[in-house]
Amino acid sequence: MSEELRGPGILLRAAAKAVDFILIVAVAAIIPKAGHLAGLAYLLLGDGFRNGESIGKKLINLRVVSTKTDGPCSFKDSILRNSTLAAGYIFWFVPWVGWIFSILVFALEFILVLGSRDGKRLGDELADTIVIEK
Image (spheres, one colour):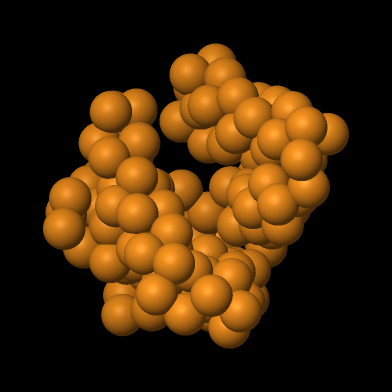
């Protein structure tokens, strides 16, 4: 990985992901049945759009790059890196057990970012990606 790639702070990453989740929840509320699936599709594919930027990352000036190629995150990379969060999103709709599972998934990802030297969460490790500031 190139030396100029610099990871952003946890607050910037959390803000970008919060924007993405607000969009997902809004779509799910506006279009009750199809909105849940559209939200899941956006969650999985969002980082593969336009130079590795989901809408949240675009607003916060972050992007996801492949550590193998130093190029933007592909749709395949996006699906791999967001599969852990998608599992939490899917199970969120199961009362109690799903909520606990979802909270544990999100907490694990947050802890891994804090403990990682490169600021990588489990999804980044699976997809060989890293989030950088533009």
